[in-house]
Image 1 (cartoon, protein in one colour):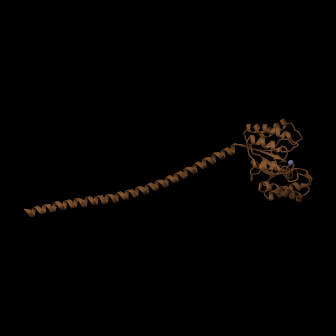
Image 2 (cartoon, helix red, strand yellow):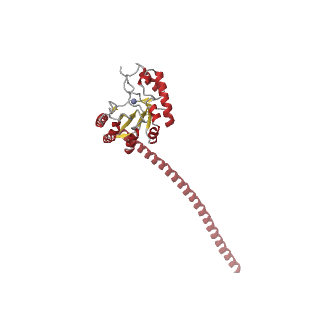
Image 3 (cartoon, protein in one colour):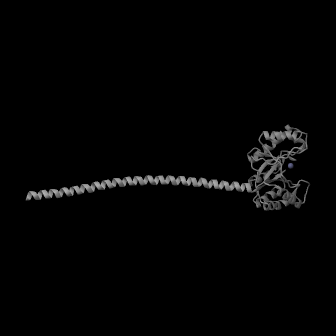
Length: 286
Ligand SMILES: [Zn+2]
């Protein structure tokens, strides 16, 4: 009887032990599978994170493309006015710069080297105000510069040296005194200068709007305004407007605010001349 009791105890104990072993096994298995789950989840999170990063990059790329397309559209739509001032710096420069500042307009100054020597402060102000500096020779002496290509080159170099001391850069844009189709000087020399400038990578440019401010001294401001706005209205894409920064032409300064406002009303935006664009070049007389 006692033996039977012991056997029963043993069975009982065995059951308990088996249950404990089973529980431990289940626990170990479930911990292991839990660990595997965690590892899987981690991997999934990592995959989602990388998908998120990729999508984010794609979204940014799309945003950039949209922005570029919008800008391109705006670029195609807008008409650009390039105000260009020849012959300075001089007595009118400060007043011109004040008006440009007031209207938040950037312009291009075709400076003459000998004037830069006389008005260094005005030259510095042009640069500080963010305007483009282009060359209009050193001497502005037609008889000298158009007498031979050698004269022209020497004069060009002299202007370049002076301008570079202010801007730190070589000249990239140039305008001939009298324009690139001037008939002053020996026949053929002007044409040679055109070829030479192109060869050395300097963009010479004329204009497609003549403000007529150089048609005499003290041209009435209203004539300058009317001429400029009438010609600019005919230009489909851009207007390169010939103006003068000259002491002898104070009416240009008087006309300038209304020119800017009028061009603005015609839908123009104002820019300084960038490098690398072909601006109007007049045909040589045949
Ligand atoms: Zn000039």
